[in-house]
Amino acid sequence: MDYERITVKAEQMGGVPCVRGLRIPVATVVEMVAEGMSVGEIMKAYPDLERADISEALRYAAEAVREREIPLLAGEQASRSRVDGAV
Image 1 (cartoon, rainbow, N blue to C red):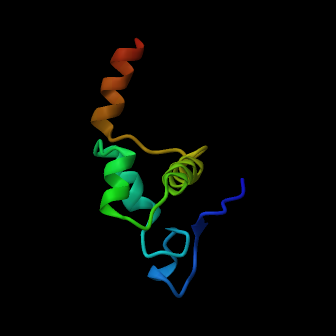
Image 2 (cartoon, rainbow, N blue to C red):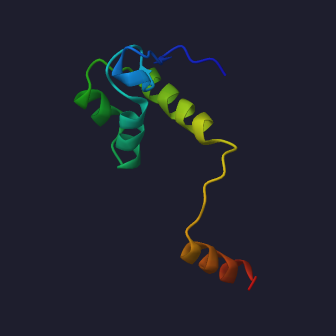
């Protein structure tokens, strides 16, 4: 997938993916959404952001974690096994 609004530059923020060359990391935008902030609230906090920036940041983050295996802690695995019916 091509991203027009996400930039990764080694000389800017240590290569962290940012929105449109701004010093606004994708992770910051995603965290704000995860905390329940609305698009309007995020844009008020970061006036340089546009609605399309937020959408693309979320798509970028989704692609970044797609098809990756995230290990569960031992206790979480045991709980999951009980829920799934396995022992």
